[in-house]
Image (cartoon, rainbow, N blue to C red):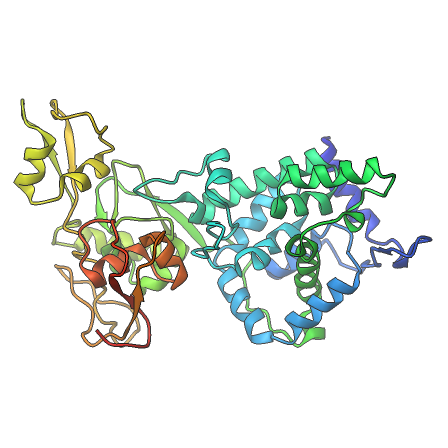
Length: 444
């Protein structure tokens, strides 16, 4: 049995320990023992999380402060929990498979409010808020096609890999969690500095930035509320203890919005499960998968069989002898830079030598969902439909350093929507240009 799994087992047993202050006046874990009949399957994912708590409680004034804060905002807690419902089963299942404490399933509450497209000023992205360099370290692809930091499956696996590594590195869950927020090097230096001064080296004894100082107390606060929501007047949504989504591999290109239509899902719900895509097409060549609610798979497949129109405005073309990428781009009326990006062509390559070339559709084409029908889902038709006219928008003035990705995160929208609304043909933005952004406010 590994040190990590042995610790988690001992942690479960240690939860019956004493609460209060030690001889030096420091707070220690409180008693969280309770009677659970483990012969009865958990009623839902929340109960499954409660059964797997294995990190000793951090009973400190900061934990109490944040518990009171979240309890005073039950509507916000409920919104976060509603968003979490799509991902919890998968995350808890993976945590259980690895033998980790189930408190880790609550970490995205603190990191991103369980928003898969959350984006921070430090360029951290996704449920687990990976910065670009750490995402690369844990093999999360970040390219023209998609950003796996926003992929709920890939990012969860990477985050748990990282947390396992941090625990093995630090030997303590509080220090591991602080390292996830501040960096393992920073935490290790703080420990080393305390050792040199003859001070204690536990989490509560370290000098840390305010964000890290509040990080574990925030997680403890979420844990307190999930452990006993009635006590804090918080209503957690029903989250079944069964898979919410499955993945479907596509063998042909399909436009992103059409896939949502074929699944008979509002675009916002489809995007919540497939937030990693940067382009308006799900590429078969890139071996992208579609994430669908389990109850939508048969609907999607049935509609796909009956669909008579083009599945994608993006095409493939078999280059002829001697053709250049420039001539192919001109032939299909697309920007050469866009063609090169879609095919990951090196800057010095000129001739397309007997290869299949992806021809991207015009930027902004086929990106709007049809107006919903009476049942609240989009109609499936034989061609792409535009959205209802008169949609309200806000205006964003492009500043130095802005990108479509950062603007999409700032306004909780997508690159796809920004391209469509502004009819952008490239990703380049000029400082001072006014972009239309979905939402309430100024009309264009």
